[in-house]
Length: 294
Image 1 (cartoon, rainbow, N blue to C red):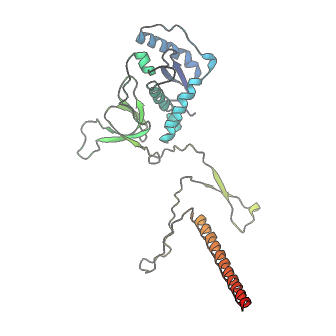
Image 2 (image 1 turned 120 degrees about the vertical axis):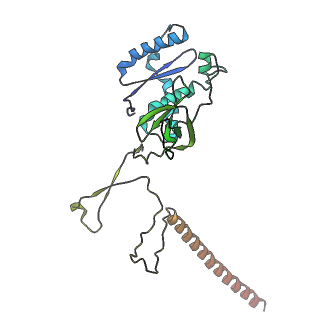
Image 3 (image 1 turned 90 degrees about the vertical axis):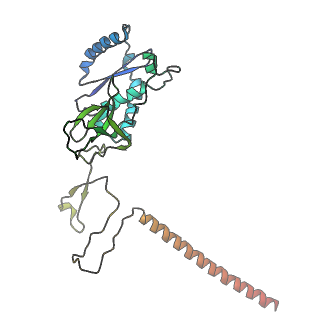
């Protein structure tokens, strides 16, 4: 995976064996794991007023990571987010998994088992959707915008506020005055940031009628998002001309439909010929019977 905007490359996942509650830390390098665990241990012992008695690594098995990363991939693919947002998606995936039921616990969520109270799910929104956040700058003019479009990146830790990202200014924000457009993903092409996960490929073209061995192919960039609708250009330069060239809309299925129509016409033609032959044979047979009776 690529590094995040803050140059994080690794996930340090901690799971409580009793409640299955998870915490995630993001590291720049693996040698930060020990110091990160010491900070976590000090924090959780002060918060829960209990001592950490045992540390299990299960010999490096990463079963829990598979569940977290599967949820992360689904959220990012649904809203077509760039891979550099993987840390924000992992954080939000863990936030959700801590608050939904699991087979390891009976009639409880990990959050309820740890904090002994039910979680509040009213602030859950679709990760990566477009939001409109209130502008809190003073002295706005009468016609200035009162909100700014941002991308939703989950819930802020230990708060009900939202984590937001401005793709244009490349900045992160935290706000509670937010309106959500949950069915609308951000159009990443507007701000010029390429978020396509597909590799750009090149195709070689050569001119017909020329010796290809002595000709250098021209490399042309192929755009995978080409619109199938094609309009013929206006070939008549005279604006006063009464002739208007017809527009042509390219249909990728037109060739298949035309072939199916030709097959149908050929079938109908064969049926008509067979009918004419059968009709002629019947007439000959009736004539033969009539002559025999006479």
